[in-house]
Image 1 (tube, one colour):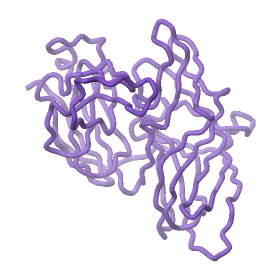
Image 2 (cartoon, one colour):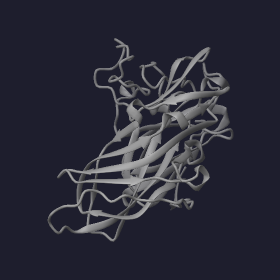
Image 3 (spheres, one colour):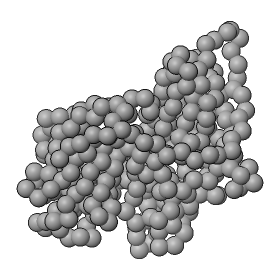
Image 4 (cartoon, one colour):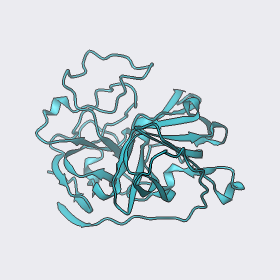
Amino acid sequence: MLTKHPIALLTLPIVLTACGGESSTQDTQTAKVSFAITDAPVLTATEVVVAYDAIEIKHQNGERYYFELDDTNNSGSYLSVNLLDYQGDDALPILSNEPIAVGTYKEVILHTLSQHSYVVDNGQHDLKIPSNKLKLGGFEVTQEAVQSFTIDFNLQKSLVLRGNSSSNNGYNLKPHGVSIVDNSAVATLTGNVESDLWSAGDCALEDGNVVYLYKGHNHILADLVDNLDPTDSEYVANPNLPSQYVAPFSSVYIDEIGNYTFGFVPAGDYSVAFSCSANDDPIQYDEIAIPNPEGQLKEITLVAGETLTADFITQ
């Protein structure tokens, strides 16, 4: 079943202060930008709290903007965010209507405070961010009056357990799986997975029911793989990895009644698939069957500013 309706964005007020960036010696055109944060959930964690003290924006010409992030709940010293409070098409504004030069920006850096960041998962555990910086991709600023961007954390890719579930040594948060999207060019995908599919075939209810999203149409099914990160130092090459593999653009667990949502997805053609057997390590290729059960894949087209509903039902 496919239906469409308008996108809605939840916003909450935050107190912010800004320090101006290095100024250019020449007069330049400026535009105002806003940034917000959202994420896709993980299976077991009940809180993923990240403390931010600044957002840094680097223009390709070398110009730099540095904005301090404050939160009245922390005496104005830093911004503390539980990412799991902002899922799907919910987002938390962290920077509002700040003027910067028009042009191409090569990098966004989120400055973090590991000593105030943590994960709650059968107890509270440390959350480490290498160098206390999340270095993300770039974006384009045009002459529009205000441009809004969302920093999208896919925690299934970016949150990595150190050790294992029986010897939890804390977590690492990596920039892998974190993207910057222009809100004017995004859509939302949502739907429901029928409960009969949760334990179909060889699946068990506790195995993890995940919906995977891939860019494009007409994929060879054998090339669709689970989340992996070959750039990670702990990645172990798997000879069974398809030579022309297609990695997920994003993935999300269904909730307790089978609903799922991908928010802030760039418009375009995608393939969306359900797997009832997705115990998915974010670094290693786990050889998860996708789709599972067979046939639970749909080819869709997302249109900017719209929400598409794609349900998975027993065939």
